[in-house]
Image (tube, rainbow, N blue to C red; front, side):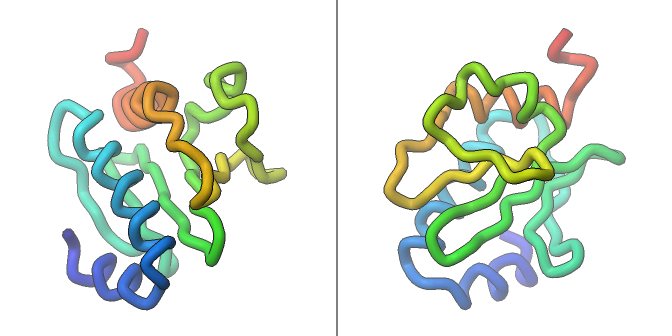
Length: 114
């Protein structure tokens, strides 16, 4: 894990850290190659060229900023979305693994998802 991201996420409680680490691991396992992990404006971000996914921790949920979220709205019933289109995964919710794998791939590798 990037040292800046590790230091940042270490400031949160165990529930936040656990949810974040699960979402991060799913992202890393979903994409076919390494992505660049870094803080952007104090937000954990994962880049491939000019494409990105952000995992933004809050005390009771993680926001996922990814361009492909809207395309999978039908798979995300029961999950909130912010006015800016970010997916909110609360710590007491199951992670929508299948949908997130597709979202991560389609966001970071848009040409491979067609």
